[in-house]
Image (tube, rainbow, N blue to C red):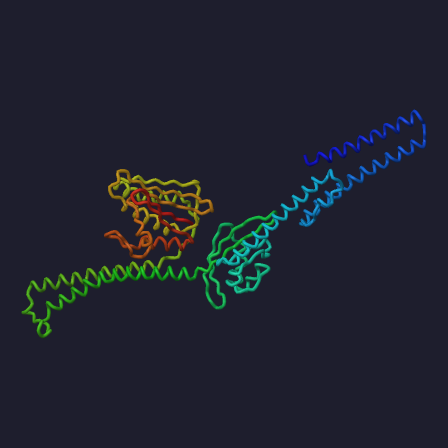
Length: 452
């Protein structure tokens, strides 16, 4: 045991002091020799002084050891300072603790350097600050993004945008923000995410800034390509028969050799009938093209939402009542579940009804020959305090290869579908600062998720 020799040393000293006291008492009561008594008394005092000095030295070294730890000083070698052989093992333990602390400090410094280099090299801007806005950390990507050499307080970002510091301070943990910032005369799209953590009693907010302008432009260009391809397909489907019919009518009413218009006596009843058929085709396709243009116009002229606090259960009950006959006719079990029952959402009731009715209609049309057909709408609050409405059916589902196409205007796999329902729904959800997403396991389950 490390302290065994220390215990023996103390016990021996105390025994000697006790024996000296006993001898002093014995001589005082028997011999009454004052010279011997004085000598023994001096010897006793010396023993007590040596014991106190021994303990004081140990206490002083212990105090110095803990002070050195408190002041992060691990350079002292304690083994050399041992006042006696009995304490060598104890002082060796001090040195061992010091060495361990030294190694931990080196490891911590290395980890901090690694983390610092990692933060500096990451392409996403990072800024952390406390409640007063005092900046704890800002990496190179953030400095380049905001074109600032350094920053002590988040209020410094007012030079970029006057309202930016307030927006950043008000961000809640887990929230996201999309900013339009003008930096060096360039308009940037910045996606901001917030995280909150504590260091001891200090509350630190960490924000990440990512310039998504390039990604948005690439996605926008890709969407335009897909839309143009579909628009071209729809327009050519109409203009092709129109041009063909006009060409046929022209051939019927003109002389092939001269190109002159035929006289009335040259036009037979059969030729007239064929011409009328051609004109009917022209009229039909022209009407179809006009209808297509009108649908496209409606897609781009959505009304501005009139936001009101609406009870979700009332909204879904109205839809359930509206779709009851259609579901009954198709032998579909339609259910609604709202948790909690008093759940509310701030939205335009008519526009959201239009979205949900469109989704229910799509689900009804997705059933083939399933024995048990089910459509269920669940409304609830998510963990990040969003209102979610999830419509689930067990219809045929959506193949993976069509997932990235279904929200493109006029894209449809239905014979009589317009292809604007889901695109219109997405635009309505964007007007509500919400999202719509789909997930599907074909033949098993398909869900449409609205998040507010």
